[in-house]
Amino acid sequence: MGDVFARTALRRILLPALIALTAGSLVACGAAHVQEVSPAEIPELERQLSDDPNNGDVMLRYAAALFSAQRCDSATVVARSGARLKPRDALGPLVIGQCREQAGDYDEAIVVYSAYLESNGGEPGAAAVGARRMLATRARAREQARAALERESQLAQVPGDPDIIAVLPLEVVGDSSYAPLSRGLAQIMISDLALLQRFRMVERLQVGALLDEMALSQSQRIDASTAARVGLMLQAGRLVQGGVVQWTSS
Image (tube, rainbow, N blue to C red; front, side, top):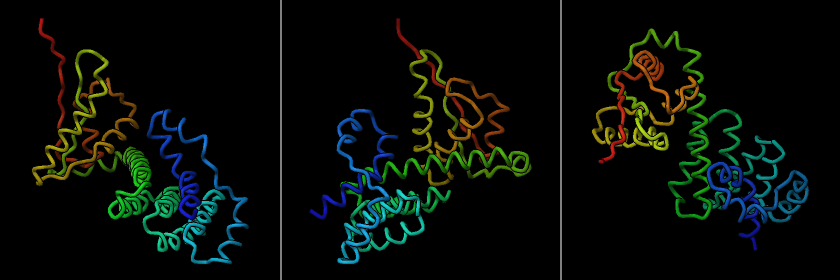
């Protein structure tokens, strides 16, 4: 019964991440049965913990209720205690990580999510923790892109590091339905170049976030001057740029 109790709280915390990253079918099959962990439950959960202070399920649900009440300082402390009692439960790191996200500390949030996944990658909640990590990584990339744009004049005075490579989205020429391949193909190139173990690769999300902040769509061609700006803001001494042409035999 305790596991069911904890999973109910887990769903409440996980659902925003799952909605953001999955199709409507997942939401349709799960959302109707989700019971929210509301701040109104806090007094009852405190009473239960008073009777049974080492109940990890109740403690994690209490942390989730505190999180819902926007009391992240308390929620984090309680979630850490609950995670020590139930280290395989995803609810603890999800509460802690999302509190760090709300504070703008995306690096620490990603560390929390990654540590859980490294030890508990096969647990039922691991997929949702991975989804939350992806959201935090994207948010960090957007924040870094905005900061780079604000500091563009300063960064322009610093030469790029020749050991850092940024791969720009490839220009897809031909049927526009293939345009989404632009960034996916760039990721393949990043992965292949990383095998050399000589260069530090700029993450695709970081490149994409910067281009998005510069209001460059996937279909727009990145000219030489724009590419130079991107390289300076990413502090990359080397840029890889190319294109793919759709070809059909007659």
